[in-house]
Image (tube, rainbow, N blue to C red; front, top):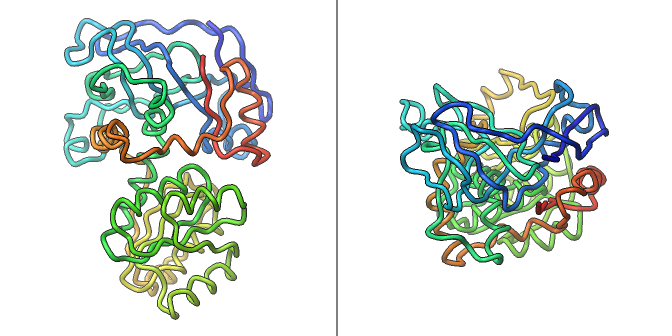
Length: 338
């Protein structure tokens, strides 16, 4: 089959790859209905994150089950399924605590920018929909595989609850869906930090009440001004840089919470500064599997439409253009259809 392979920074090719097959009896192979480019894919694409090359790319997926291993019991061929970027057994102590991305048997699920994908630990990883969905739901269901689940985890980790003031640092797909998540959780004020008009409009559509275009110390000062010097109750850090992390911590009121889901690159935190900030911090790779059943129901019942973050749709063989468009900020998120 043909799939996306990163050969070096900036060199993303759509080329011949071995088609996946059942390796372990707990595996499933799915035919991809839709996949996409993630903001975290851009780190190795830009050469900021070291990656072995050549590397099959993509970790967001949904599609139809083609084949299952002999030990798979709950997942059947013909089902439409969604899974997370980490396979998990969904039964170990960490999974039972709701942290499937720390499963004792976890495996990264990569190579999804292709027509077929092998998913390990299928029973624990994949969640089927009630029936095969209509085309109108595909984009939103795909968003649940990572960015919507990650935005939801950011809000949950930041202790968003009814009536609070929320700040979202980052206007990529995760940040925008963090805004949607905070809105669904009942936040009374949601401040989106963005300096891009198109993303600001989407932030407003998802529930942002205020937009702040300043960054760094100026951004923190603006947040303090908007909150009468107090700071926000909950801050979602959805970027992963030193500046974004400091901006998040410094925008949080004493006793408030930071939920951080941006993959960190070069982030260091001064222990004494954190000590005196009096903020709660929680985050990491989002346990998307924990939220999939609830989020699938919300999409199925047309209560949310996270697929709106996809502002560029391309055939899979044009995946390299999807990377370029996102890298150049011409697109928020590129949807790919085989």
